[in-house]
Length: 286
Ligand code: PLP
Image 1 (cartoon, rainbow, N blue to C red):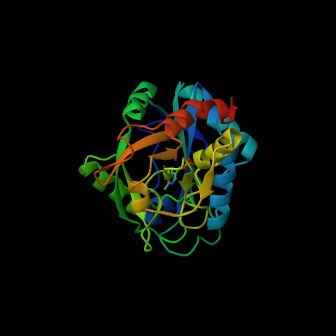
Image 2 (cartoon, rainbow, N blue to C red):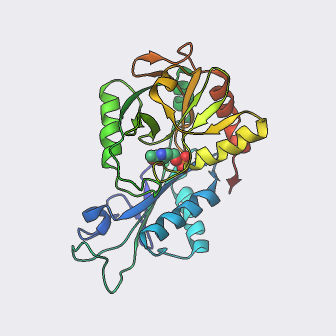
């Protein structure tokens, strides 16, 4: 089935959905994005994703491209037109189309909006989760405001490619103090030998993952111990378990970091249980 894209007010086929050569997203990476999981036809944590989009837009002083109620309707229409049962929505907003000049267009222009939906093979990711993934570590070369979900992803792209070339699925990024910030496209977590779960605190050096936020609620509801603190690579190597979170990876066990097996080198009980219960606890909207 050919995919349908919503672009600036119209539902278009792949070949019709073209952006301008003067779009500031294309020229400067001047835009933001969101990825929302679709699970059994429902959106997972839609409100939190829309709130984060709102914050990203505000931080970059880009206007909402449309009202929030029609926006919510378009999200659903894109899912229906693409017949997606399990998959994700991709939303991108750029500052719009204007002759190339670094400063904001004056007078302002209408932001560009792209929304697409794609199916994923859920069974394939379950098989991956049963085996767990390998991760490599790399220096975190990103700018100092990665809390804003911008489309500027060059360091992330390079890190993911390096991971792939080493037979790994994700790269954990390490700051100048030798501490893990997050993954190239996910948040990073460990479970220490006492069973306490650790993840980087929210500041400007990580993206506040929506999956992360929801998982913190789930961990609290279970009464499990969580510390939002920075951890080192050597703590990660010595951990009982490690995992990543993201709207696409959900909770994905990490079984090896930089060639070091984590725990027994197989997915541990904490990450496996958190993955199992994630969809029951996350907020779904139809
Ligand atoms: N950190 C980075 C750098 C990401 O790109 C992502 C997801 O794309 C995440 C964390 C996880 O965020 P979320 O759980 O909202 O998907």
